[in-house]
Each structure stands twice: as C-alpha cells, then as structure tokens.
Image 1 (cartoon, rainbow, N blue to C red):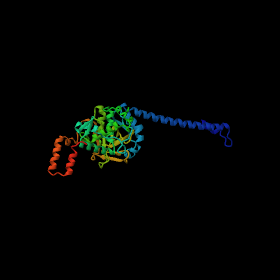
Image 2: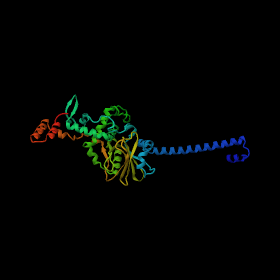
Image 3: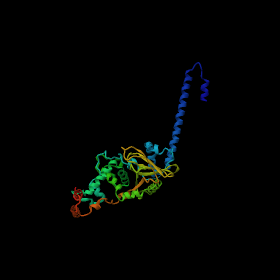
Image 4: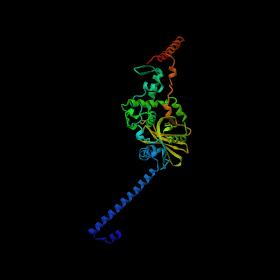
Length: 379
C-alpha cells in the first residue's frame, strides 16, 4: 500500500517537499525492517545454541565451555591440520574429569627448559623419592648424597633441559585431586601460581618429572602401550568412574619414537563416524584446550605438538602398531620409587675400601682404582 501511494504521487519533473519526505520515510522503513530481521535471525541462533548447551549435564558443562568458547577459537592452528578431513562434525562430551578447567587447574605459565635458570632436583627431592638410603651422611638435616646418587641427580637435571612437560602434566592432576595443596606454593589456584622466584614449585615440578623415569612408574606407563582406540576407551572408563578411579597423563612420541611430550587429558568428545577428540591441557599452551584426534575406524591418532614452546610444532601421528600414545597412571607415581643406584651403594664402606685395595694389589689399572676410590668418599 505504501509503495503504490508513493509511486502515484511521484512527479517526474518536480519533486515537492512531501514527496521527498516520503522517500526518506520509505528508506527508514526498509532499514528498520532489515535490522529487525537480522536481529530475529540472531536470536533464533542464540536460542538454538542455548538449547544445545542445556542438553549437556552440569558435570560436563565446563568441558562444553572450554570447547565452544575457548578451545575452538584458540585451537584453530592446532585443528587446521588434524581436522582437515572432518568438516563441521557434530560433537558431544561423553566423559570428563568433573570440574577440570585448563584456566584453573592448568599452569598459567608455559613449559620451560634450560633457557630458564630455575632450580631442579636437590638432594632433598632425591631423599624424598628413595629414602635415607641415598644419603651418605646428613649435615644440619641436609642429605649428603652418595657419589652415585649425586651423579644420578645431575644426569636427571641435565635431561630436564629440553622441558618439564611430564612434571607439569602430573602435578596439575595432583593439585586437582588435592593430593597436594596449591596454597603451599603461594596461590589460590594452579593457574595463579608463579614460577619465577618460586623455588619450591620449581623443585616440585622437577620431582614429578623424574618419576617418569623411575620404577614402578616407567613400567606402569609402558604396560599401557594401547592402541589409539583402547586409549579412548580407557580414558572414558576412568573419567566416568570419577575420583575413585585412576588418573592418567598422556605421553606421546612421533612415529619415529622421538620428540617426547606429555599432556593432561580431561575429557573425551565423540564426533561423527567413530571419531573422537581427547581434550587435553598442554603445558606448552597455557589456558588453551587442545585436542588429540583419534579415528577409531582406522585406529590412528593425530596431534600438533612440540617438546617445548621454543621447539617447532609439527604433526605427531600414530596407529595401532606404533604404540606411541601411552597412558601414565598417577597412582604409580605415588608409590615408593625404586632407587636405581642404591644397590651399588649398599655395601658397607669398609668392604668398598677392601675391594679397592684388593684390585690394586691384583694389578688393576690406576685409573680404575681412582674411579673406585672416588665412589667411596663423600663429595
């Protein structure tokens, strides 16, 4: 009606004031209609999205938030390669650690190596791990390590030069279950902790990093050399069992067995066509939810990773045969670790002196005798 009336009053040779006003009113009406239509469409989209979110249980709501509000935006680089064949999949969280959030339970600082002048293992951590048997004596309560213990500690500290990923991955879980109190390290949450100037936290991370290389933790991890499909199944089982079940970190390598890295899994998403995403806290990327993609049909996995933030990131992948996606149980880290060097140090000091003297009498080389002697005196 408005359009027909407007055309009937239009003069080709002359446009009066009321015709000009009609032009303006028509333009305003069209713009208002367009804005209203767009707003209505957006409202419908928001309403639909809210209904989808409401279908998730409260237990898994945090994982939905991490995935849809933080993870997808921040993980574009991570997913661009591994998700190239999975276009706009439908996603649903099928199991998760209740309440775990990378912005709360993950460290706010990134993984580090030798570029940081931080404290690693000290004799106190070695004694804590293996007991007083590693001490040749104590001075003012401080453990003086045996020569072999000192050498072992130095080797482990040197190995941490490439990164502390395993220690950070494990400690995040231990804080999560309150096995260790985060307040003892100067924060109200894991994410609020600061590493600079925090020697106690530096040493704690080093301690848990070391457990990956001691027994029974190392064997427990290696026994979990599962296929990618089995890894997903085990995580779903553990997550659904809640706090009374095992907690795992994930150790992963490239197909050539190099570039080891460790992350903390906290949820599993089910996608289309038997594809799953393991949501992880990757200590190379603070405050970002990352995803290991498992194709259950092909029994393969893919993940963009690096050993530390300063190393180049590239595509890690494996299958049922590579066994390069391993679960490390937290319970094994909490057990008394077996000292790998104590048996050699267990003989009484007098026996070691007599053995060295006997070797010298039998013509043992001076170099070997000096080496033996260096192991029976305190540093």
